[in-house]
Image (cartoon, rainbow, N blue to C red; front, top):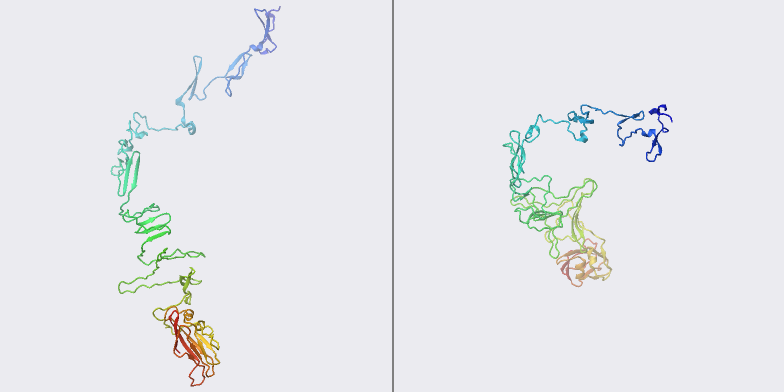
Length: 493
């Protein structure tokens, strides 16, 4: 057996996994082997993403561990010492510079200036109140010495700090209700309500609205009269008789203190102007109201006002007309009288008759001294005994050419009344009967029909062309109504 001293020396650095130790079990006597390299220490770091305490070449000669040293990167903030085999790291608070910290996320102050050390209560100059205690419900204010003082406790409902220009120090007081104002102070609330019963000055609402609800703006504040405004309309009046159908309802007359106009706003361009209707009150079963247009009266010697109705003028178009309309039996408003606009100013009776119940008709224009009438072709009555009808007479002129003496009856009185529109007693109508015969003895004699009374010579002689002729062959007659079925025909020429 070789001696140990005879064996070759194996350096630690030369040990490989093929080198072994011989191991014997004292109980069993069995022999085993251990690899020499498994007996050397191994070093690893248990933490994740952490710094190792040893160097990358920490094991030298297979069993020597090399640790990193620990030192402070800023000895003003951190010191490193060894005490009782412990490594002691000490943070130096005095070395912390808050100005270098991230104040946005950390919320550190960059600087604090209290101008000195504060003991006891923090005074006003140091940012405090200078008070050691303050009563529940008290308010802070600055006094005459620029110190902060506390009011008494605000233990009364409605108390406020109210400015005082005399002392310069606010006063703890409640609000005082003025005219038409009531104040109700409750726990934590002040209710201010208006109670407007009288007003000595002008109320300027500026751009604010007043909601009256269903109430009136009245003289005494209690009677339902004066002005009432709703979302649909407005009522002005003393009776409280309110109508919802119109935008503006007036319960009485309207007076102006100076010359005034009532008209819609004018339109522009080709837009049709708005119409204006003035209408009296209607009724279901009673008589409807009349529409009266009265000019002003003079209480002394002054001249009374005139009623002037003027149609509209057009700068370059057609001037407007003046029309008087009434309803026809068919229920449509029909023009009865029209005064034309423009240069002619013609007055036209569109429908109905022109009746003078009193007074006369005067033609006082020297250029137009007479009435221009319509004359259709004369009516011809035959050379026989055919009745002279109301239609014949209505033409104004009747001609006849008899070949012998002819006797011709008139139409009945009833037909003459209706055909000639003799609507009331004493209405009359004039007509002429011309005898065109030139031979002697060929005369036309009118006789009365039923209800017709004749007055005067009813014979219209034939024409005589001699210088001393007695007849020119024409007779002029007037038909006068005396009743609905009675007329008198007079010979008037």
